[in-house]
Image (cartoon, rainbow, N blue to C red; front, side, top):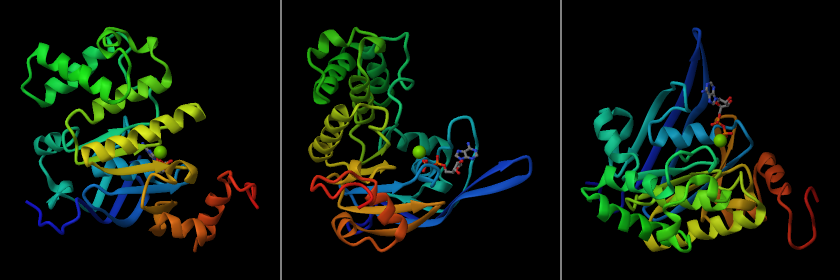
Amino acid sequence: MAAADTPLLQVRDLTAQFGHGGVVSQVVNGISFEVAAGEAVGFVGESGSGKSVTARAVMRLAPEGSSVRLGGSVRFDGQEILQLPEAAMRDIRGRRIAMVFQDPMTSLNPVMTVGAQVDDIVRRHTGLTRRQARARSIELLELVGIRDAARRADDHPHQFSGGMRQRVLIAMAVSCEPQLLIADEPTTALDVTVQAQILRLLLRLREELGMALMLISHDFGVIAGMVERVHVMLEGDIVESGPIDAMFVQPRHAYTRALLDAVPRLDGAGAGA
Ligand SMILES: Nc1ncnc2c1ncn2[C@@H]1O[C@H](COP(=O)(O)OP(=O)(O)O)[C@@H](O)[C@H]1O
Ligand SMILES: [Mg+2]
């Protein structure tokens, strides 16, 4: 059990390497960061900077269809994740740390009803009967703002819009009330108006469930107003870290400034000004 002042997540000198035919390429270069219980932390950086590999490393997962060599230390609730037996890891994944991905189109099974997919997740992590699981699924779908949830549970994914599918995936992610939710570009595939709704939902769930949140985006505009602290990633390194408000006022790194300049501003100063 972790002491009260131990961060929920403590990452030290994390490295990630891929091997291809004897050639090793390192894509995360020994980064360190912490996430306190209930805290929201942002990760921003251009495409390919190592955000997703870092996010998956926290769950000790490789990008789909590949294997990755991880080094350094990832401590979750005082426990070293990188050394944990796979069985113990499976108990943490999905139950204590959950993840939401970019693409709500491909993450759901097209031939199963939405309700059945939520039921599966609920039953995998609890001892609930089929009937009890369905009641819990409907509760979860209502929690994420799906109207008429009892009826919609019998629909298939193609009957849901992109935003509604992402809500379903968020319902599945929070079904076990994880201590940490990792959202990796959760709104990138969605229309702008829907993006704002999904971000508001994540904010509300974080408050209601007391979860910590790692919010990952290539876009500073997405994480603004969502997190207290932010880490800026570039080519596998964290190049700048700090409170997001201060960073908006005075970025220290030229790369951070370039990322901020790409965000449209309400005061009319405009991108690139
Ligand atoms: N399966 C893989 N095999 C080899 N290299 C990969 C693989 N997945 C990602 N990479 C590389 O790792 C780096 C970081 O990728 P990623 O974490 O996905 O970036 P981001 O999420 O910031 O866009 C990139 O250079 C990418 O090309
Ligand atoms: Mg990514």
